[in-house]
Length: 394
Image 1 (cartoon, rainbow, N blue to C red):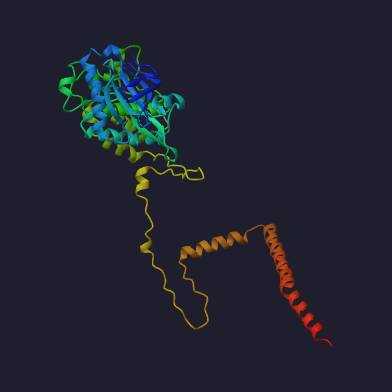
Image 2: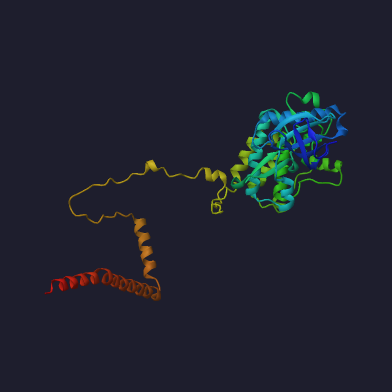
């Protein structure tokens, strides 16, 4: 049993408890030699005799370490306590889970949804390319970590029941159900053993649905009824449940939740591209004034917006002449003439009070200028002349 103040393997001192899961406890600690703050995940004693659970615990370390992605939690070490309990040493993340965000905020906007989904799908694609299927993707396993002016970082946690392409046959039991029921794909609910990356994409669709609606698409009073819902019931439209998203974003979410895995996007990258093509971009980092640029254009439209090529601008060369300068002639097209005429008409249409106010202001400025000329030009000249006259007098 881990206790606060205990040092594991002579390297990691336990400082506080962070949480308790179904299979493991998580503690805050510090590396004694370097002083780095860390998280320590320790498998509960009651599972030490279960070879499959111990093997999956070790697989979490290998799976996370094999991906090397900034949005996947970094696993630093894998070892055992003096009592023989395996533990993981991970980077310490201070923030909130996506579950906590949804509970606090309710429905998230489309921009917030994209800000979370973009790096999350990129991390999933990296995991899948490394041969790792998470199989338990849910808001509890998504951490949102403040990152200063850059907004926040998204981190994927808990690869404890993930599968790797070279380990499926030895660690998956025929007919077993692995995953959290509400986010379980239909093929997982049926107990199939050939689970692939498309199960994660289904869970991603459920996760996005929950972000938009504030509730999961399927729920029931008991486990068996929930499985039947996942297998047979069509999801209610997110917009029908009050989601503040467009029809196009809704279609992407429902596409990911297709019950037939062959009908879903084939990769996380493909799902990400679908979402970014129709959703507004995530909010950019605040400027030094704390303000954000505003745009309603979807990301796909913003990418296609034209840019000004400075090299394509032709400038009229400057010619130096000994003759007196002349006022440049202006060649205006019809549209320019109409714009000038419209502006002139607006000026001429100004109310009399406005025009008289401008005349009065101009008069005041003229008087001030005249006084300044007298004070700083004429008066010094008169004074100097008087002095010269006085000096030359006999």
